[in-house]
Length: 362
Image 1 (spheres, helix red, strand yellow):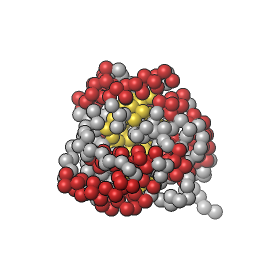
Image 2: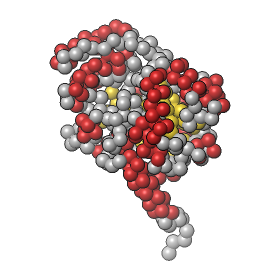
Image 3: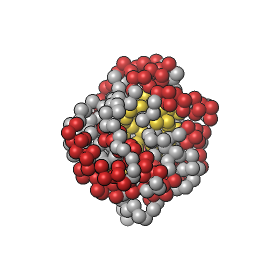
Image 4: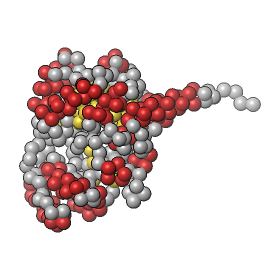
């Protein structure tokens, strides 16, 4: 593992930054205190909201932690396609007695202001989703002592991350819950993607950067597998979503292991960009027709999702979850880190006890 990451990771366990109110300071603090690396999600928050959560987290732990930023969206979707989708959702708005949101509510998520705050008030780690920051931004963060990580979903994206000067790459397999961190949202992206173990192997042969592997990891044995494949650490999201410290709603937590939800899929239904979640009524009815229009569709559906949550109706909520959601455990976050570390140690011991391959045959 690179020296930049060594001091941040007593254990090779990173808590994924889950936007939308899930990755709250209490969760990040519990993970960091247990020896993992907790993360805050600045996505969808105001700059001041991000700053206040950092202050709160610093009051809860003196251990290293990270903050995740969304890169500004470069694509400009067809407004006519967004209008058509809004017309399709009119019945949903009427049912939940709410108005649809304004799709033109903003496209850059306050990126420049958030980056400025993180340069003025440095944190141990900053990660980036939906693209690669300018080399100058990564260098500026390094100068103030911040370790930088950037998500990639292909070997080609990982190469772009390395060339920009990041300290590490987060390799996100198609199994991951929530938004795929693709650098460009290409047509058909919701039907594409590479499995994590294959992707880690490809990236390992393409770049020299330390790899943090993400996607569907729920057990210590899976952490051992990605470490054996060449990763330096594993990033888990859905596993921590179910913890009591998580800011996810009770409905969302319960849905992870509810037999009513038999599978996940990548869908544009809620945000206009491919994101993996439990398949509910909203995904089935609207996913096939949702345009490639992020964050316009995110803003459009925000009031619907909030109204559904208020009504206790999980069938119209964005129930982000990775493919391993059925393996979620209702454990305190710190205890979950301990259990994962124990499982990892046991898996490594089992691997070391295997007989060497080859040799003479009787």
